[in-house]
Image 1 (cartoon, rainbow, N blue to C red):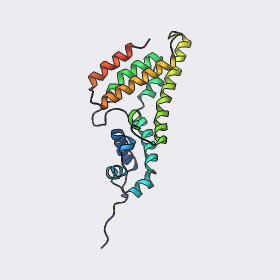
Image 2: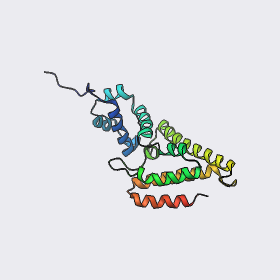
Image 3: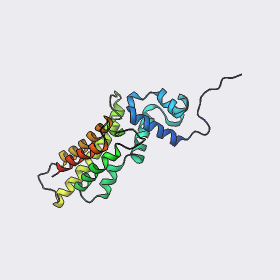
Image 4: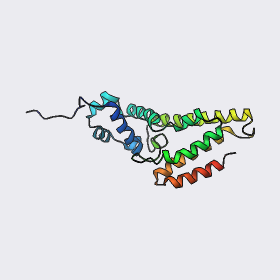
Length: 196
């Protein structure tokens, strides 16, 4: 009689497995999420995980991209939909508290905290690159508003964009630390008042 081994079930749903990986990385970060955690949550063997997603770093990169599409993306939507940089910032400060405290999901933001404690330079570059790209996009919108006269010419576009994204990072981290939605809303209102 042969002993049954745990492989990839024929009915394995790759997208559902990816969502489980997203939630693990979101909750624990890249470094603290082990291959054993991943194989247990996904219900597949390590070789099957490698065949389905590649190594842990490759899976993490795919998870981060899917996270931004499925659970994140509110920053990109605000940048695409709002007429001014100020409107973008106010929308972000208003939406972030609910985004970072969704019921049945980990608190905070995978892009903000997924690389915490890691010594993997590729993982660090991936997430810092995403965070810096959002600062760059907002800074470009602020510069456009300065040229249009919507904001004063003495505004430091890069500093204001960095402040805004730093405030969002603070909201995400506060949510991970247990701050409730109402408190995060009040913090967002303070941040919005700091805008010129």
